Image (cartoon, rainbow, N blue to C red; front, side):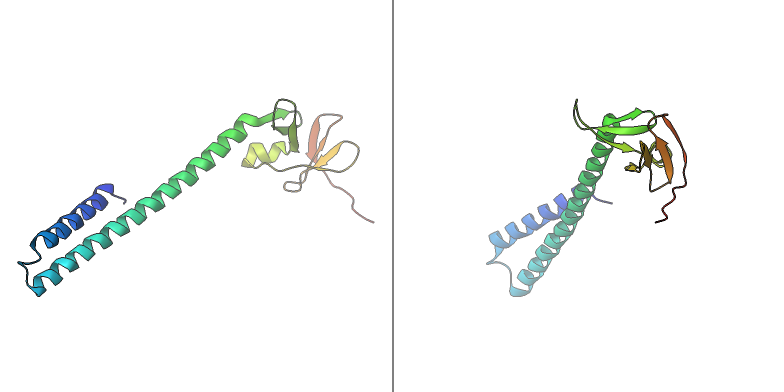
Length: 145
């Protein structure tokens, strides 16, 4: 668990030890100075570890935020026009078409491949879409050459 208070406490402790060393360097013997320096190094190491954990958590949070914003943006710009989906780029332009079944079932945006005669095929689920009739069904395409 990330605790910012622990990181701040470690830094505060390190600062106090450094001030103590600075103000009392003449009154300490070598052993006491070494002990205080070891405490200072320990406090700084603790602070460094806590700050690294905080940085990692912030990066994870930023990545999750970006992912959620991308999903929201897609949801706002995805338009269903029977029998498939289109993605709005702006008011005049759109991208696609995309498989209705894959989007509705698995939330996957799979671009359809144009075959012939206004027929589109999804390479993921193998469903075919027929523009002229606004229908879709499983299709078998003969690829013999």
